[in-house]
Image (cartoon, rainbow, N blue to C red; front, side, top):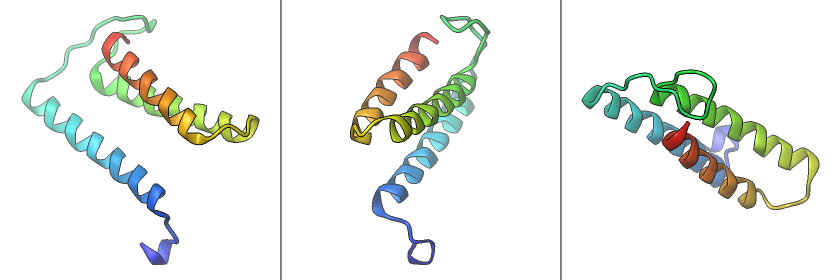
Length: 90
C-alpha cells in the first residue's frame, strides 16, 4: 500500500466496498433477486439498488467536502442510513 500512498481510512473504504460486492455476489448466487418496485420510480434488483446507493453516497460525500466544514463521519453516517433505507424500501 505504500507505493500508492494510501491511508488506512482509504484502504478500509475500498476493502469495505470489496466485501459488499463479494457478499452481494454470494447472496445473488444463493438467492437470485427479482425486480420489484419500491419508492424509486423504476423496477430494481438488489444490485441496482446497491449501485444507486453507492453512487448517491459518493455525491453526498462530495457535497459535504465542497459545501461544508462538517466532519465526513456525519456524511458517512447519513449514507449508511440512506443505504439501509434504499436497500430495504427502494
